[in-house]
Image 1: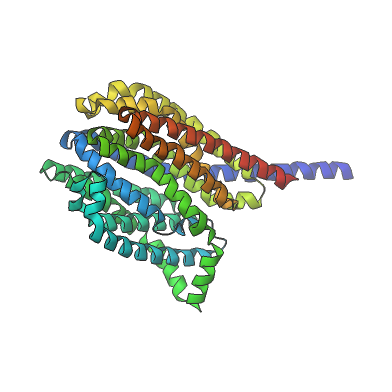
Image 2: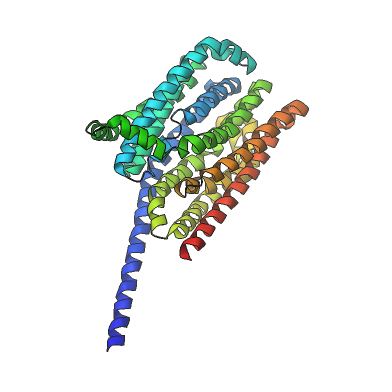
Length: 441
């Protein structure tokens, strides 16, 4: 009788565990669906308006935009010293609120300093980049850095609070505003200013939708005693992020943007084509990868403490691959024929580049959502080493190619990116498996 009772208890316990697992999996996909629905609508707006924009703006206009976005993207990534990146992974809500304050302080200081430096040295810098026309848009650079850094910080706080529907809504509003400005100013002939303003102001309106969450956090901080000491201790507690994560993020974004800026100095027409190809090619990443990654980051800390890291990571990789890989393969194979029809005959190179980008895109869309694992496990050094490798493979190879054989620079960049993300993905899988084996033993 005792054995029967014991067996029945075990069966009930097993059913409970299965129910909990099913519920957690269901919640995971619900969170992903909330983010993806907003991202899908936003990308649909951008994709739907791009064929009109490419008929208003030339590849050279997009080439100049690629340099602006490259500069803003690289600097905005480190403007908060990556303290914003620690917000979803903070051990307590109080830490998360303090990290919000620290992120906003460092962002403000960075923008003031960078704005001054651009004001006194922009002429020399833009001449070195081969883009003297950017002098007319130098004021937009610090503003763009601030708005991008602010949106990133607020989005990280919203991720911690699991306000995924709100994040999705903010992305849709961003896309609508950006498209309206780009098409409106392009229609009346204000070129390429429309491209710059559309990309810059989108982050501002996106932040408005997330500001209420920040106000609650700011109110919590305002009531804390010994705030200066708390901020200092919080900074020291999460010092690995400025020490390791900031250089890692800088190398990552620089590995993407510096090759495009380099190619723009060689041929602005080619860089405009490459910029549009990268923008379109990364749509699955922006649609699925970032959304799934935000949900993964909101759950990874708990999965580590529960011993479920391997299951969470495997399910994330499988779910991402099932959706993203077919999209990339179909889109890449169709692009040489579809791109000239959709965007105009002068954009014919975009389709060719998209075809060659498929290996890189597949590997990146798999690796990026789970790349948070290095930070969750306190292995920021591993992430930094990987990004140093990626920087060398992508940037140095393109610089060498631009000197020896400029016509091969684009293909070298695409190949280097694929190699980097292959190594990155393999390292993530090995890290998770090794940790899981250690945890079980």
